Image (cartoon, rainbow, N blue to C red; front, side, top):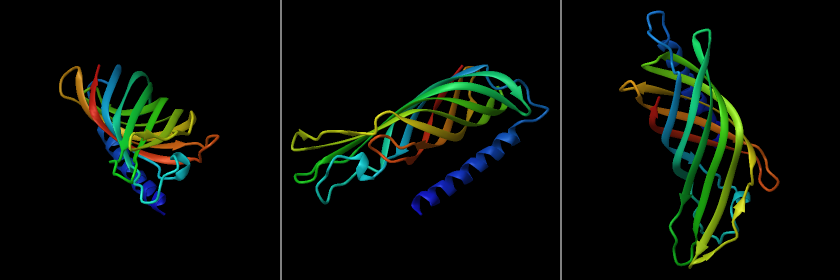
Amino acid sequence: MDVLRRATGFAGVLLAVGALAFGQAGPGDRGQPGPWVVDLRGATVTLPSDTAFLPKLPGGSIVPGRAFGFDGGARWFWRQLGHSRMALGVDASWARGTTPEYPTVPRVIETFTRVAPDLSFNFGTRHGWSYLSTGAGIARLRGSSTLKGVASVPVSSGAVTEIHGGAGARWFTSPHLAVGFDIRVHQLLAGARTPATMRFAASVGVSVR
């Protein structure tokens, strides 16, 4: 139920951003999104608490629910499709979540990494635009722990297929610099040692062109 509730809320946000995106395009707009853009953002992503992604932990252990890090990418805007301008791009993400270490409770560390191409549909002008995007790539979740200086054997999902979808916007405050945000859902398929899992991410940062 918790996953369903979060997925429903995420879908509502996507619909709201999509409405904003379509509302930005109009016959009086000057210029088109692009022609290229590079993004660098601070990011946060939810982490799984499933024991398949973690080393064996003693009772009372705390696991991180969220990781913080960064993501970045580049996009090339290549053709018009109706009211939108299509762009091809690639993204890379890294985020890490940790908990404190106590005398009898280990410190738990989880990391999330991914590299994925994407296709986006951008609505607006060269001064600011919203977008919807989707793609697929490779992701990895890794969990480990330390207690009194002794590290556990890490558990890793290995490189698994990641399918993602999301939305966001960029607003240019100068001809070459913009601020923007991105919200995204990542579906990681099952690996050899780990089950499928859905993760939610949000990021805020800058773009240059």
